[in-house]
Image 1 (cartoon, one colour):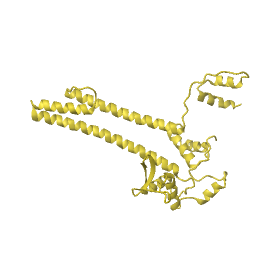
Image 2 (tube, helix red, strand yellow; image 1 turned 90 degrees about the vertical axis):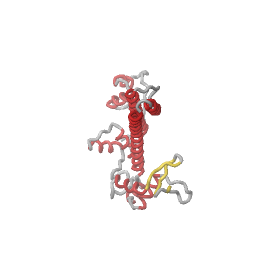
Image 3 (tube, one colour; image 1 turned 180 degrees about the vertical axis):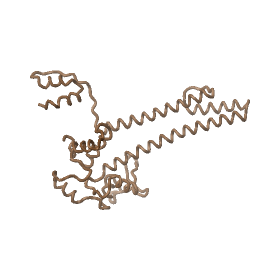
Image 4 (cartoon, helix red, strand yellow; image 1 turned 120 degrees about the vertical axis):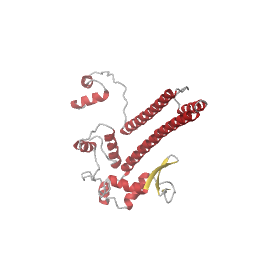
Length: 276
């Protein structure tokens, strides 16, 4: 039998009334509950969904803005063509320039040529903005991945942002043939024996080892299973510890940021307890 004070939480999750759930749990007979179809997402799935929604929203907004730009230009210049394709706009402007050139060659050609150049510049600006945003998204994703690969027993001589900056100064993460590889000086790092590309996790561990950034004593304590020993700075053993830290810092535990923090805590500590 579950605790009574947990019934509201469970009922809220199942999208049913507290009283209905309590009645079903305490009944001595079988009770049929109508439970709506639910979709449960992991933190990773929720983040992926939200990232895709943001990306789709940006692309839809960009397309709508571009179509509005074509429509306004079309009306302003009195052009006639089907749809809102920028290529059709350019073709219509050029045709009008040639037609009008027979009447007012110099003035019309210059005016319409300026209009063409202006619209082309605007469209190029849209494309540049889109590429810049995509690059920023990829950079944030890579930084988040690298932070999650940092060894749990790293020393506190530097903070994680400093460790990240030093790593990125010498190494880059790229995608070759659909797989992530690590590059240094433009060359892919490879295993000396197999010549296979080294995984990002192995590269990170190698850097921390070579620079003596690992606490060997802490690693030994973990190997002996000392659960009562305090974890290294920034490492959490259970969900309640991470939640308290966020609440003490007046940060919301509802949303993508906290979900990302939970994921990072799990990656930093494979024994991270989600149930306490």
